[in-house]
Amino acid sequence: MGIQSQGQMLSQGQLLKIINIQTQVVQQGLDLSSIMFLVAKESQELTGADGAVVELAEDGDMVYRAATGTAENQLGLRLPINTSLSGLCVKLGETLICDDSETDPRVDREACRKVGLRSMVVNPLKFNGKTVGVLKLICKKTGAFGENEVQIVNLLSDLIAASMYMAVEYEEKELYVKATTDSLTGISNRALFYDRLRLVLSQSQRKQEGFGVVLYDMDGLKRINDILGHRAGDSAIKEVAHRARAQLRDFDTISRLGGDEFGIILNSVSTKKDIDNFCDRVSSAIQNNFIFEDQQIKLSVSMGYSLYSEDGREINQLIETADQNMYVEKRNKKMRSSITEI
Image (cartoon, rainbow, N blue to C red; front, top):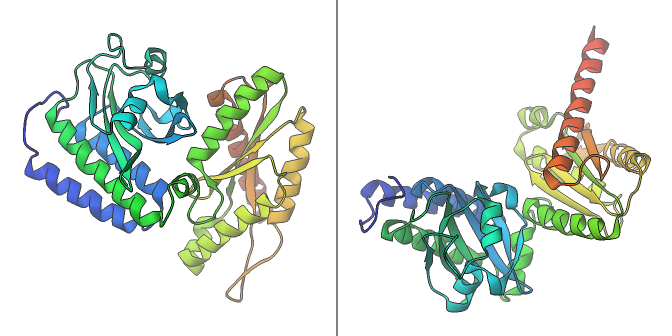
């Protein structure tokens, strides 16, 4: 289906796809952050949109808590609730369509240009009778969304709302915790990592001080899963997260970015030597013996980092540099291992 179609009932194929998405949501259990990402991704694919976003209303802002497609790089973005179409959707509690962001007075035009959208449909997410966020589809073209897409976004918004109800037992403020916490390790997730990274970047630009971005992933997780099973692998991931977190200061951030990959934001560091010392401490702490059901598991990680502003002044630059350095270390480890075997 193209996103230009309007005024049509959902096809049997689309309905079957939505049923399949419901099944996938159930399989996620109470992992609200994963459910929001899943629904965003599937809604984008089902409608042919260029991107999809789940935004939650937090402290006067609309915050990108899940983002796919052309919006993916904007994860963690905060926009004032009173100046955006999403904020108006929260206020009114009804579906809103923007056919052209350049002429619609309800939108934050500069933010739309930054994300790269010209049209969008925004649907409310309701929890305990109150609108707490939105599911938004975006497109680079004008006039991209019609009744067909509205039907789809309505149905998929209900999936997120139902998941909120199941995941959050009592209070609305629990939504923030559930939406920003990795369900396996208990540390923050990818969405909160980018939220904090944008905040630290803004503060460092004002104060003209440095900070570090550290990325690391586990060595040999596949081997652990293959030999001891995924329960052992999950336990190893949790142990690596907890050992690294113990080395952080209270004002630093550690997040699970996905799979066995983690990110750390080190506030107020000025030299690469400071980050080197931190990485050495984390690596040493992780390499201590780990016992899982009487089986000794060898843990190690490969790490890479970047320093603001020496390695860049934008988020993408800092992430790319840290990622490249991490894989250089991983490649060097493999080379040393190969030489040892010879």
